[in-house]
Length: 110
Image (cartoon, rainbow, N blue to C red; front, side, top):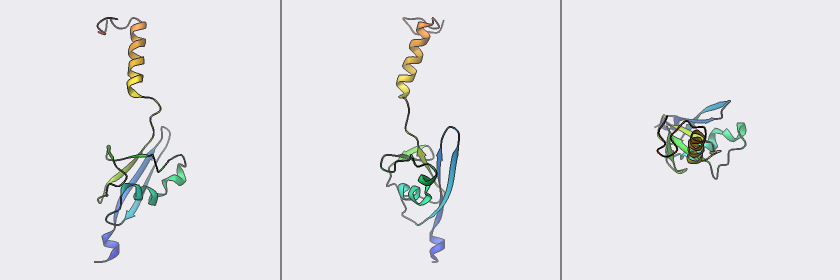
């Protein structure tokens, strides 16, 4: 079998609030997610990506760096959270109580 036929395409994507980058990478069977990210050279465009700690996913499912890719998959590079979602919800609920938009005892909307 020809080596070119053994390789397959995957996509590596990284998005910021104002821009995104999608890079197609031709990889060999057995290539891991982190290897595909390295091959994409996404760090050239976004130097803040830390390959040691970055979280990765395939179609919105978080994966380990060493997960082996299949043809047609998309590796997503996740940004670090700037705020804990639980804290944000808690603060929003407290603000609603303080503003009188909910019952302070039951939490029900008025």
